[in-house]
Length: 120
Image (tube, rainbow, N blue to C red; front, side):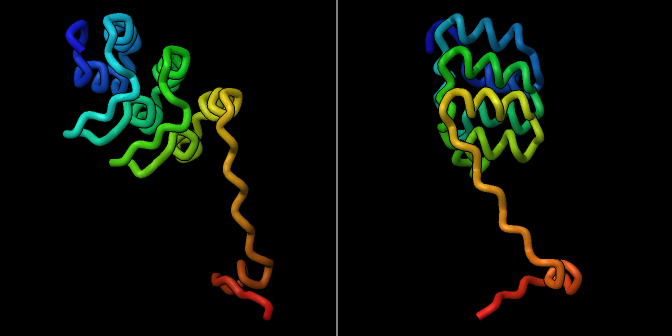
């Protein structure tokens, strides 16, 4: 990583500084690296920070669309769902990441009673 600074790129991604992220990516910083101090990938961090443009840029420049972030305990798709970044979710899906199955919705009685019920 002699041509760039991963920590600076990571912070820029979280802050939405696309120009600085671009600089570091072009300088050769590994967009899939998870620094031992952070244990987070730049892609998931940018998504969780709501930085859609940065996330899309990282995806277009080699970020692995299914690489989980250990610290955040989330994949990029899970992070996009959590933050509501629909464009990122669509791009991830276009890159082959399956959408999670919708959660089973409890029946009307369970919702009314505020608990789940199962039939035997």
